[in-house]
Length: 439
Image (cartoon, rainbow, N blue to C red):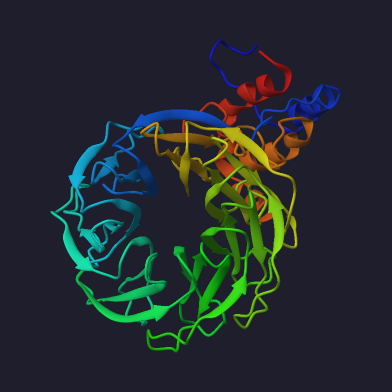
């Protein structure tokens, strides 16, 4: 007789019996929505941008926020459970609107870079190694810098900066000396009133190229790297009405980075597919919420292809567009946020291996966290349902983890740890049965 507290024994007979009973059970969806609301974190005045990374080397992703009207950057440490401690404030320059995170000085911890709209400069705050930061060092750039990308443009393994300047229709490139110190190396013409900037290898030659969203000319500028950290003159492609943000991701699964812009006046995103040589197609338009101000690409539903998300300033929500394969997208799924969302960032905030979201709300003075529900305990075949079809992969995960990972490469083995003790064993069987049949 089974004693109290003794786990069910995992055997072929029990697995067959389990399957026989549960195949007749009604399916239970545990992912009716892809994202559920998480904590809402107070920050400074007019937070325009948020970035996600592990800042204090504890294995959990933290957040950094550019507080435009407070002239500060706020650091929100992850408590180790996907919730966040109150922000720690560091002075920035005048009007920070964009924050990005990378190891700028080669010491293996994450540093900060901010574009400062009103003071026409970039702030660099180097990490002391414990998640606290040294006072900012300022580097001048062209007038009204709005966005920056951190990319290694000259193959020296030190991340450099590319900064868009709204007033002058230019892009400034600053080269890192390897110690987190920067020198202006070039200023390049782009389209009218540039906002967003992103970098990736667009032409397949192994170096980083740049893309810029041009708000005033409704276009995206592509600047191909000459191979030494300098750039050929822009090639400008039509995008959409009020192109304000750009992201680069392989949307069609052909191995090269495509471009997507958020179009503020068009209430759309434009997808421009890469021909593999750094040339781009005419835009395919997809509807999102009103006045989208930020766009990011990433695998949100854990099916192996890149999806899209926008922060919609005019409709107080964010839109999720799931990739249907081949770089085409379904209708938007809209989720409410606090007022006037300006930026969306992707990162694994609860350490369950999927991408969660952080959204700044400029005039609510908050960052809202949304937890991804695509990784659901017991969903061992990654169809976002927990039902009888998960029985065989559950048994395989417990009995032969290596075979499970081969058979289900895009799934998370630890979703079989249903009792949450950090181990895969027979103690997970009874909780798994309860997921399928109810307590």
